[in-house]
Amino acid sequence: MSKMSGEKASQLAIDLIEEQLQILPVAIAMIWQPTDTSGVETNLVASVLRRTSKLSKTGSGGNIAASYADANPALDFCAAHQALHADPLQKTRYLRVVISNALLAVGAFFKEHDMAAMRTPEVQFLGHVYTAILNENTFDIAPGYLPVATFDGLVIDGKLNGTLLFGDGVTEGFMEFGDALALLHWFSRFLRGEKNFVSGGDAG
Image (tube, rainbow, N blue to C red):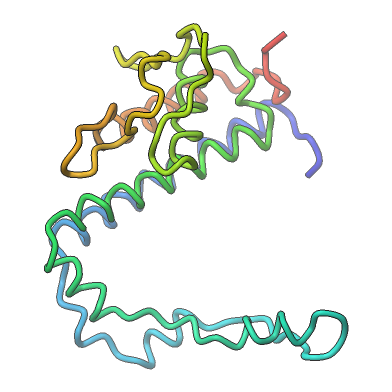
């Protein structure tokens, strides 16, 4: 991807964050108070999950790729709904996945555009959160790490190594879901006020 100006990268990041903040309340409401999906029409699901690519079964590796591509990607809405009601801890897990995905999207954007190199404590905080999500919701902090990653009173230090980022319903985590949403809101406001920083970061 070609490099872009700091202002353009900032605006794209703002758009991405605000899209996440628009969708998250809907997803959270659907998980916390799930509607009965047993009546979801097959044709409706098929129209939503339709595919655009048709892989050829010829050529090197074509048969292998096509065999995977032929698998029906249909989702079992009834089974998912039943699982959500059968185990109360599933709500926590589903919420964690949805909120983590939003943080991953923003964290990946920051890395792609070298914004993750900024020394701003909140940016460094997001970097550790991003890594923890990819590490099965568990912090992986190098020995001797000096705490520079903070957000709203939350401080990431070496003592968190091996502990949970978000609680799993049994063990308490470092962050609550509300902290994650507050972090996204913070970045939206921060980037609006800092559109002129260089997209290559200010880690120099």
